[in-house]
Amino acid sequence: MRGIQFINVPTTLLAMVDASIGGKTGIDLNNIKNQIGVINNPSLVIIDSDFLETLPLEEIKSGFSEMIKHSLITGIKYWESMKLININTFCPGNCFFNSILIKSKIVDNDPFEKGLRKFLNYGHTAGHAIETYCLNTNSRKDLSHGHSIALGMIIEGHLSTVIHNFNKKLNSEINRFILINFEKIIFTDQEIEEIIKLMRFDKKNKNGQINFVLLKTIGEPVFDQKVDVNTIKKSFKFLNEFS
Image (cartoon, rainbow, N blue to C red):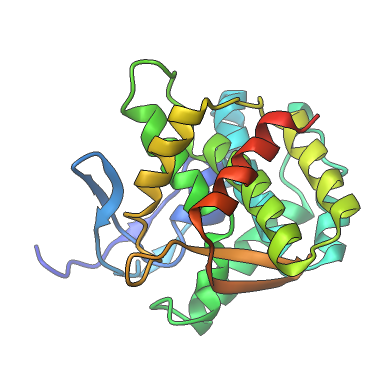
């Protein structure tokens, strides 16, 4: 059935605002996330928000993390709306539909991730490595994709303050909002070393250098930002110490 046409009917918030849109498919290989895949767009995506009523809070949070990301890469107006949401009483609204439209518009303009679509990877270089580490070690409980990306945004937000002078006060506001909704995880020095090793397998990397999407300010992301290992370690320490 190579090349068969298909329709996506997402039933989780994460799939509705992110995974069902844009045609990315992927499977893990050798315990590394999304190492094999193609871009094959569905003929249609049907999104019915009634499915959200069937989800546990943890699944709502996993999609909510991607919505936070959308607000940070898009602009201050969306972020101002986002930070008013109480995840415990989440219901579909303007932010939910905004995220769907943002993802759709970006992938329509850059379907094969040559430029603009890379912005959607904010929080994901660190986040995917954290997710993979927690899935493959007995010393940690598994973290959802959204929880891992939330922690990744704190790490990459700090990198943004170091490399692009992203406003520290605004970054603290973002971090506090994230940690209201997601449990902070503290990583040991050894765990940080292992997670950074996993980052080297990230698909955004070139010539063995770890690449990030970082923020100059809300709504002004930049991609292909090379960061040295010592600076990455300091951002993990920032996560450990932030309160």
